[in-house]
Length: 314
Image 1 (cartoon, helix red, strand yellow):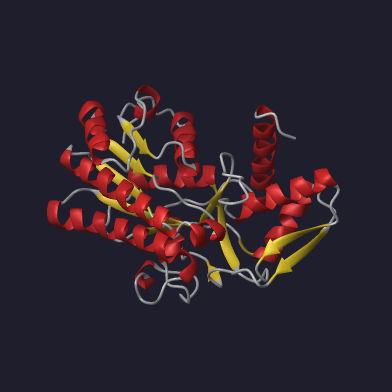
Image 2: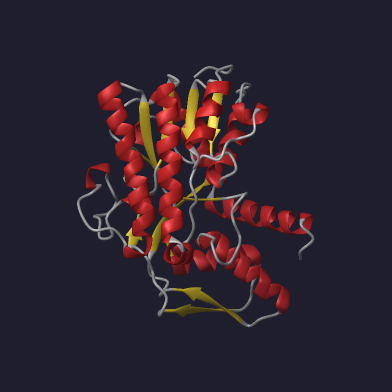
């Protein structure tokens, strides 16, 4: 992938897609299709086909598909599964049909079994039952993994798969209904601070553990992988801290400046007990995160404040 290669980020408005566009531009890539052509509705096959026919991208980062936290996965399993199945199938087929040189599909750490040995290795995929709260979304992501591998085997397309840790950062969805855990905690604590509340409620026991990666770091990992990796086996994209939700809540409280109590609601689901990725292969490629976790949290909170101000909210 050269500086002038024609690059399309499918899902350019998602958290990871937007970060990829920022980082590609930062690294001097000058021919980004998202800047010259409006993105199609990736759930509509005819729109995707027409876009690829017109634009003819050489490299595709597939970051498309809806996602959300535990609440969204419990409420919207059909929406999340359908959107991700359609988006990945249409994008991967169009990339094949129009002879894209290389495609990187981003799956999810939800694709691993609920009780997966830790840290999770790619060999552990499909070795056990999925976490019920995100099963529908996870099945769609697994289908995307297997579809890339099938095109690779049948057609010898250079389609590769990355499985990221939990990404966060500027561009998050901070809605209380659909947000991931870091965004939800920032929003709850900020609102509580502004109201002068003495406490907030955190879903679950606080004991579940998650690995987090700053979205700009993840974008840089994707760019490196696109340039240097070509194998059927998925590649875990992580290397950030592994924190319990309780530890995470304390870190967010420090950044937001919320002085109240944290009350954990054990009647709400924890999700998978732990999600941490085995990333030795990525490390051997010479990559590791560059942004300290507390700095990344602070940048995310600043973006939330700036975005809220731009939209006229406190």
